[in-house]
Image (cartoon, rainbow, N blue to C red; front, side, top):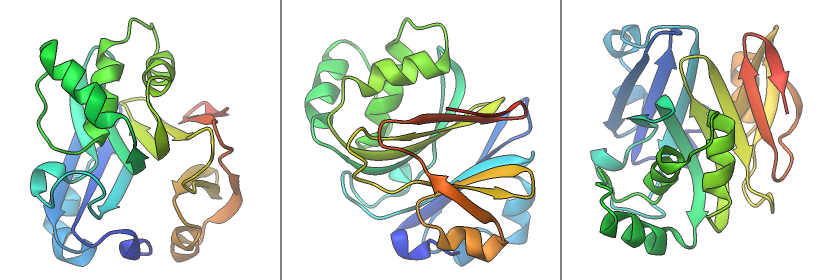
Length: 203
């Protein structure tokens, strides 16, 4: 609710219970999409959410985020705020080599690059993918085990880290922390990747 102004076309939430990812997305505003019955489908105690406005890709449900895929790194969900300057060029290359895209959003390019990575860890695959991209981005990834926050090397897009009791929270604006009575800690640094899991926080 607190970041509805960041996008009013669509919204989504993906949650994790440690065994699977559960997704609910829709066109419209947060209060229109997330009825009590839909919220009940979001199992677990970890989640990422997104409100979207079009910067790349049409205004359509297929472009609503978070985007969820099953890839070489397992189940991964992605929220992306920003613009990727070379996404179209990379997408054309990926399509020519056999990749099939489900959306027209430049955010999906990130997931395809992660899937193609030969790195052993999700963090390594994310780093390898982002090193091929140019532009502005703040990213949240969700797997069965953890949430990963990443900010682009120039820090073009904001990304804040806070705490709700002993649980970490991340948001594009600190007004989201105020609504849930979380305490702001710091900004995710430009070029920083932060792992958030049951074992704590690792930068």
